[in-house]
Image 1 (cartoon, helix red, strand yellow):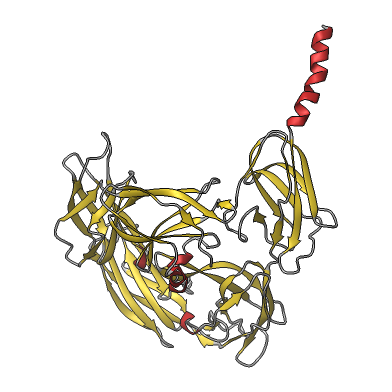
Image 2: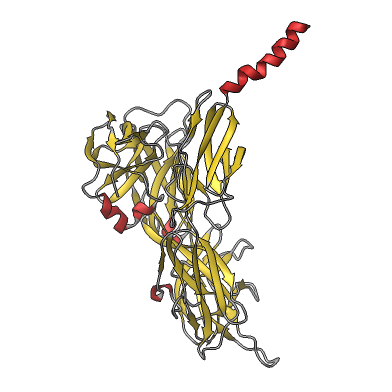
Length: 498
């Protein structure tokens, strides 16, 4: 009994030296001054197990940590949260591995103050408008620039608005569409249309704002010109007016449409109210039919439209495998996508005879891909298919198992680099990318044979390489590589500087 009690008292003393300690400093990115009362969290991302608060010097220390791998991050009101090792908010960070009894120092942070955009809304007479403001942030997807809504605010009774908590980036600011409140009970179609800074009713005339970390853009005043909204109406000519028939009117620039939605006053008729002048796309879609019409709206009602639906297209195809076949039991699905027209993907399941069929296709350029993503398998041909109104002849899809692969390490003068981005560049296009692990290793596979460049960068936002201005910065960097069929290569890379 006494022996058991002695062992119980001894265990904490034995275990104590095995615990770990970390410490560091949290500073302001812009002023380099200390950030006090910042909360430092250690654990798995989103699941803290240990925490500390910085003192007046921005210093923190966490003790009693069990050995293991962790993520370390910090948050503080008035700053954007950031993960240790990340090059800014919303960027990948670096994990921390603590050995038994380790005391790690120098785990420092630079916190980015958020950006701010302020201004006023005025009508054409210079009177303040109390309405909503919409914020869009520039991003890139499959080589195309787009703006995604990333916040908003309400202007006060003096027309003043304030958008805050913004990370560095490129933005557009616009007013929201708002009906004019009439002075009398008589209904009116007058409306304040969505207007981009400084006074453009179309995104093409907008002036973008580039915010640096902690940047402020003030006096971003928007002048909104009152206009009269119109109605758009017409008739649907279809083989079947099913309940699944859907009609939409969308801005041609890709931003949210500004109408009040589509109504169906009678079977086979549609009407959209509250539409402001501009360029739109009118789309009708059912499981078996479709119609798409470009529509320029002026100051008069658009009536008598005949939206004639055509049958969706079904295309047959067959799969051919170049090289070794897939593992037994693999069932391929060949996927057509057309993101440029916001069409739903069409999947053709490959049967035992290697035949496939794609349904509900509409005319346009469709991109071909496949699932599952088996190692070293890639689409050999065709990469794109142009579908006409009458469909397409049967398509032979060739998938090759002779894809190359490459692996290696990324390093700088200090050693292996974790969370670096490795880009496989063909010409001016990035075909694939990979993120390095904590030991600096990366791996890319399913590479079609050919000539490329491998570039390793550390501070880059995902998909920003689709921006031509960013892509040009890769020229002359990295290493030139050439891969043959089924080649398994090793290429160690040095981190490229911006």
